[in-house]
Image 1 (tube, rainbow, N blue to C red):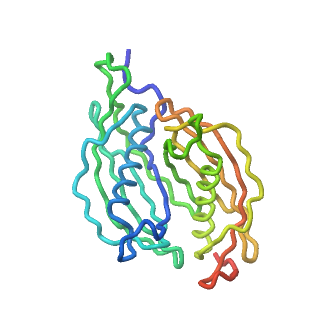
Image 2: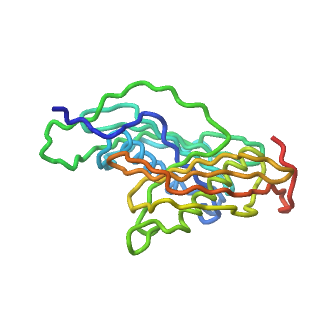
Image 3: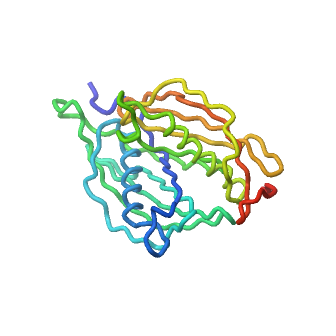
Amino acid sequence: MSNTPSGVHTQSPTTLIDIVFPGDTNHHGTFFGGAGLALMDRVAFIAATRYGRAPFVTASCERVDFRQPARIGHIVEFTALPVRAGRRSLTIEVEMVAEAIAGRERHVCTRGVFHMVAIPEEQSASDWMLPPLKSQAEPPRSEGAAMVDIVFPDQANSAGKMFGGEAVAYMTKAAFIAASRLSGRLTVLASSERIDFSRPIAVGEIVEVCAEVIEIGRTSMKVQTVLYSENLLSGERHITATGHFVMVAVDANHKPVVVER
């Protein structure tokens, strides 16, 4: 009987996306290095757990050199990929890229290597081991947004379920990124047309939102978002919420401008 993980595992990249706000920066106006490292470790944990479907802890990370900074207003994208698997250890490569909205310029801030160790829940399964790695081509990058995160206790109510407002904020962030990437302009939320919740999200689950611009007007864009929840260990995945948001492209004076692809 095999004791390799029975759940679905993936070797495709896992992406966590965020935006640099003033509270995330130092006195130079650049993204805190510690905050960047924390997000790199978080996406490495998600990628490892998706691959092995077991609890993981960070054993170590190799030297990380920051080549270029991320600044206020930049989109920061963290991409993690398993590159080497041992019996219970997994090596994850993480790349951090900063993206300017105006001009769509992207640059690599840093790359890091994280070594994660699985701690199977069935401690008696002495022959438990990770599945072998298989090469898999990286999917092409789209103008939309697909990003993952984990639900923490401070995002949940007394029943241990994610606040609806937190889910909406996450979907709105994805809509902002998708609309800004398409237009190459700063965008603002004009309206939320409809949001439907189909199931609650528990603390410790992975949340992934996919956002895509489905209609383009003169200055506005309608963005469709789908929020998935995923059990860390089983890989069971559900559509949890869907939403439609209208985003408007604006200039430096926050006046609407024509959307030009």
